[in-house]
Image 1 (cartoon, rainbow, N blue to C red):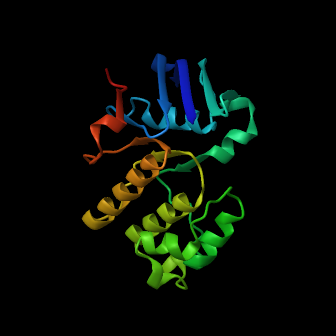
Image 2 (cartoon, one colour):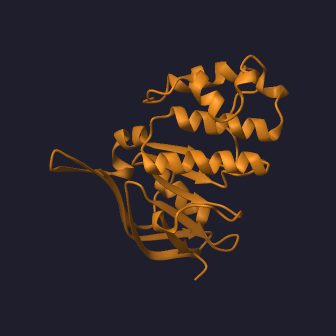
Length: 212
């Protein structure tokens, strides 16, 4: 079982405190939904969870429980955490001069990976007919689907998603929600922001409003 624990996090940007004394915990099968107005610190918190930036105060711990033993990793001081986490931000992170398949092959060499094949991941996001197409020729929604395929292939326990439904149409959003739900059902964890209403089991969701 995996476990993410944040204790008394404080974030300051441009001499303005975005949030302070923020504490929460997340365990396998749970989703943390970050809410709040623009500029309230949602993306800054995601960057802290990714290890991209440090909090001004507080502690972030990743715990793994195996065979009744608990192993703790301080997120900002241990590189092994990166293998447990996958991030999808506003930018898709795709290489435009490579094909769909080449993008996933390149990404897979950098990931821990799982038992899902590239073809299976492309089928999940309905891009299996575009495998040999250059990414530069894809629509914005198709590029987002490709980013989701990379997420599926990552093998990461913790998905950190900043507006994952960007550029997706109704069917694309339903597909993304289905993959997130499957990840949770398999014991994964998700931290995400979204301006769209989400369709997940309320028992799986913890909400934090950074504007309150």
